[in-house]
Length: 309
Image (cartoon, rainbow, N blue to C red; front, side):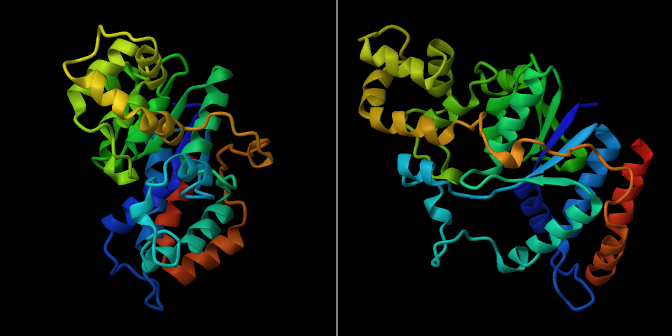
């Protein structure tokens, strides 16, 4: 049981959209596969993990200006012709329904202008861990592995194998899988690159070299310091020259990859994140369930909430 469960909501509803057939529709034919899938995911998480508190973290800005300024390639391949993101139209149409259902149930949503859901998660996780609370982060995004911390403990429930087969990733698990210090995943990803986010990485530096460098120097900051100080020991063969050539990228990418853990915003000041035992707005929830063919998932979520009350 965690004191706080933080949902990477965009990661989950994208997974639901691509995992549940679009043939799942409302009476008027509107696809509701992402809504149904997300609500069922939350129901299972509440039932199986029994968190005391839960926050649905949202992207208020999927491509923040401060990250684009540091590295223009950041998520550039996802920019649509109109300048927005490439969210499929059938999914985009479901996002207001998702917001309405979560609000009617009484599950708090949190997003901050200028920041991604990752940054909201990082800030809330750091705050809870500092108060001695345990945190479960539910995501399919490996970038959030950088937040794991056995002292919290803060761990990631990784959804790559599905919500029924969550991989629990703490510091020991991250270290065992990638051969790096448990909290160093962000530095490791910066070095080897991540095409899904438009991070080119350092040319010629792959997984093994990236792991060796992070293990030896601890962080990108440590690597840059070693370069500046003329250190030659500890660099795998040929890597020092490659890193020196990529110095500007490394300095910029650190800003891009690092999850913000100290957002100071009123949106996060006083969140009512306690799990409700009954819906906040039952009449609206019934209307939404009827209109969008959500009776089954909504009832499963309400039963899960009532069972843990």
